Length: 227
Image 1 (tube, rainbow, N blue to C red):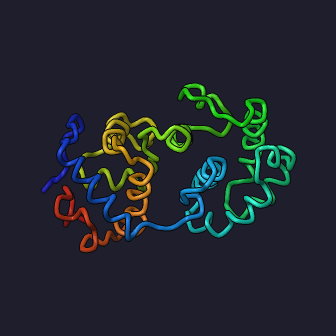
Image 2: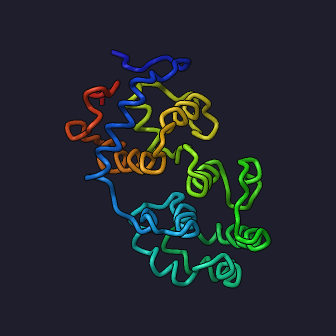
């Protein structure tokens, strides 16, 4: 039986509210603790962590984050290091050798801007190393805007629970997924809800072997039992 809804469907408001409430409650006792999630974590620390989290496991970033922040506490420190040293130092995180140039370019831009990111999304997207995910992350961190940290793990949780199918492989260009993710994150506590969704995807709603019996959303999940 096909449990999926049509591509054109809108998310039910009551179901969205239930999704938000249940996950925020679950997160209180089940959420993962990371250095960049602390209440007193500076915006720079949070944003640098998000940059490192691109295609890198959160546990790996957590393992290296302390010494990285000691070595690179400011944009100026990143710029002074240069791309070659950055590539060597960030090698344990993967892919950083080829990203080092763009990170150096971002540090150059940030120093020119006095350390402040633009408030507008289109201006953020024009910066080096800033794509759709990072633009959302920066606006979420610096402005508290209810935007999704939409990656493949969050996409999987949303698709399974709400029962819709994406129309494109690339989540960045899937209008249905993007719209539904924004709807799901329309809350007064978007940062913690983002973390809750990501943690559920990592710990419970896994790609290959979801632990449905332990899922707080199981009762109303559109695809439970279809794996």
